[in-house]
Length: 223
Image (cartoon, rainbow, N blue to C red; front, side, top):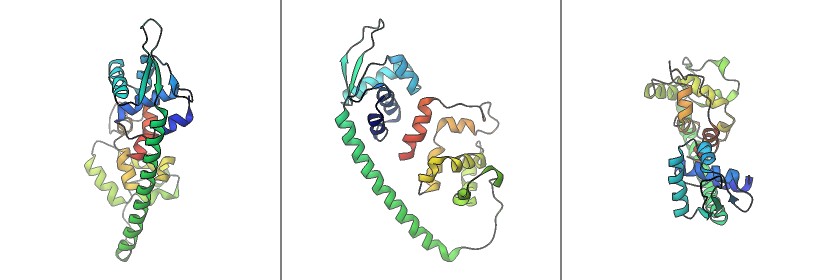
């Protein structure tokens, strides 16, 4: 596995499933971008069917993200791929610079909002939706009660207090300058929705796959 190539792939702005397939290839590639995983392995890492895997592999070839060096014969000989390392590196650098500028704009906007809201602050205390014992960090107040009540109304089938506690205890949330936007992005993660569904058979028992964790940690963070 090439850590450098994998890190660059995670920064690319690609459709989610196609990106997961490219992540799976990068996970098997050496530093030159050469790899030869079978389609069953790639599909398993991306949590998709082998048919869907083939469709996305063809799309990556058509878009010049990868090149098929040798086509496998289906008898134990896998196809061999070469990732377009230079293009991946170039696109990842551009996306990283764009993300840094966006974070700076968000920070400035947060400062303006804080100044604008300061005269309207009161000492009135509202009952919290989150149990203090659930959250172990001082930043538990970064999601307002009013915001959580609004989200609970929008998502009545989810246990929003538990979802919010999990988000605030997640180390990745400390990198979000806009906690409300970061929390809403987490609401889009399907395996987490299953985990915090009210009364669902999968509530609290769903174990995310390797690809789901990669998508959660590295892809939705830039959404």
